[in-house]
Image 1 (tube, rainbow, N blue to C red):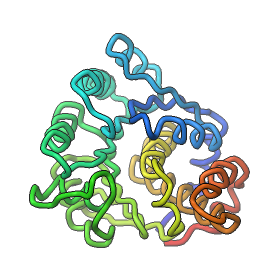
Image 2 (image 1 turned 90 degrees about the vertical axis):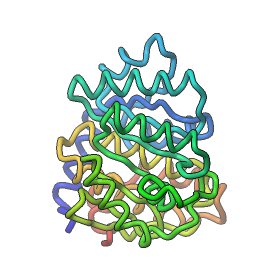
Image 3 (image 1 turned 45 degrees about the vertical axis):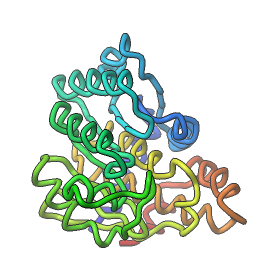
Image 4 (image 1 turned 90 degrees about the horizontal axis):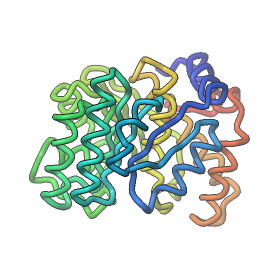
Length: 264
């Protein structure tokens, strides 16, 4: 079960310390992820130039590698930053966007896993399942499977990689291969807003930057994402207004409101 006092403490630490979260992410997600991190209290930086990524990663509280828009130069930067961060004992999060859609994405994701040893891997159900089963094909960057269907794959992936694995979906799951925890908050409109999953990975980075317990940090970050989405949806006519209301909710939500609203 989620520890609500620790949830409040973790969120407070994000707001008080404003951890720098280094994102090597896709063009689609950059603006939304940056605004969400700022609204929650963190400090985002989007840097992918090979000449600076290792240095930037070293000063950040966490490095988030998102493979949404790939090319050879970006992959080289991801590997350079990820290796430097891991070797220094820092926090690395991988978002394997679109894994299973093409061989290039799957190969790149596994190369990052094997060379950068991410502390946390966060993806949708299809992405997590595709990392374990090559026969699973994702629908571009969207999930074609329920998060419930991916739990066993997530547990296997966690055991194989040593990473905490997070599945986002109607129900969010967090596992270390043995423990499994859930977050039941959210809104059916959330998947209709592009980069919501990418933003979840960035938020996990913010919480992990100020909490050495990667399992707890992942669960707490997904709690904030789900609760904020649920509250924002109450006053949203559709995905467009949800986007703005979601950022506003991240800014305005209190620790008590977060702890009282979270459901498992």
